[in-house]
Length: 550
Image (cartoon, rainbow, N blue to C red; front, side, top):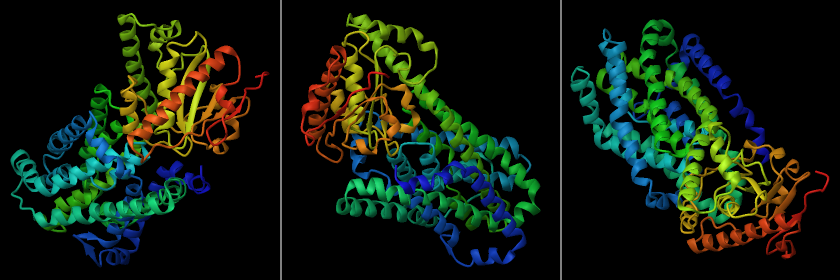
């Protein structure tokens, strides 16, 4: 892990504290330094204060630099693409607005102006801050970019009729007329600019300076600045409304009620739906946060243009993000808290289905695996019950391609290995977690190995004491922390990275991994060094046996 990334880790760790300080600072500035409001409101972009616009663009750009745009065509070709997009559309454009309208009517029946503003917030789907919440929760960056882009296009096409339908027809509010060009400009500015900047940055720097420099040097430095942009935006946003928050605190508190109910209900319901569909955690988090988040800058602009800057509708749309920020930050921590449990349940169900299918078809199933099947009543991390035999972890840079294929191969070969040879099998990333590469999933599926239930993990998720054998996949053995080598059998297979290469390279690397996994099992069962330890360093293996006294 780079030093720059470590030096900024405190920002992530103490983010709730920093956000609280930013909110209080903004309110105090707005209340006791009135000139700040005039300065911040001096100029606007699409009816949004320039300082807020700068903050929104600042916090979105680093996140969009991380999106692997080159993989998006593969995502659209995946078997889950249609279901993913359909689920997102139904939740975002039907379920969410109805839920917000229902809560607005249930809690604000005597405040029609505030109620209409809240309904507007529910119709405006998020295209900015959701990128931050998704990243903090470990969501799928690529799918988040796709869903945000789809929602942005739909906002241009159907926001006006949707707002009329929910505000007037369903909500029984006053007539509403929305400027289509205002919606279009909002999308072009707050999504178009940072998206274009992220694409240009990725496709210009990566080819010229190399993918390793981009992933390990550039992204760890620029990535944390998105949180600084978030904190800056919060200070500006709260300072612009400091007077109104304090002077009309009763209305603010009333308006907060439907918003809190909405965020909690939508997030929980979407996560539950994804769990029922056995969707991987990363995608479940993405779906849940894109559903719960709202495009407050668009809702504010529409409310001001339609009802006036001093209207109750405008005030309620402004209150929206003030409530959204702390609530969604709390949901990020909730998401991370349930992450391991969510993955455990989903993976065990997937594994149970595989074992039951093999037993029913008469295939060979080890006693240790049947024991594992019986013990699934205990919710534990992946393969924790597979304690007989050597425990193995494959380590790579991002836990996306090679280490994922190795985990899949060794788990499959374990089923036919001598009893007590291979126990727990895991994979992890050295510099963070990414996502299982769609081409790796396809190549392994062609070999009857399903990686769709696997997920990307960081090495800090595990403890070195849990493993007997540590295998570096990418020639980055020197980067593996020393505590992961002491007292271990350690190997560095030094396999070529197939990422951004044709499918044939994935096939080639997969076969190399297959051969080495077979030799790994043979060397363990026969109590000898692996034959691939005789390979030249260029071809692939640094081998260090496990000390006999451990």
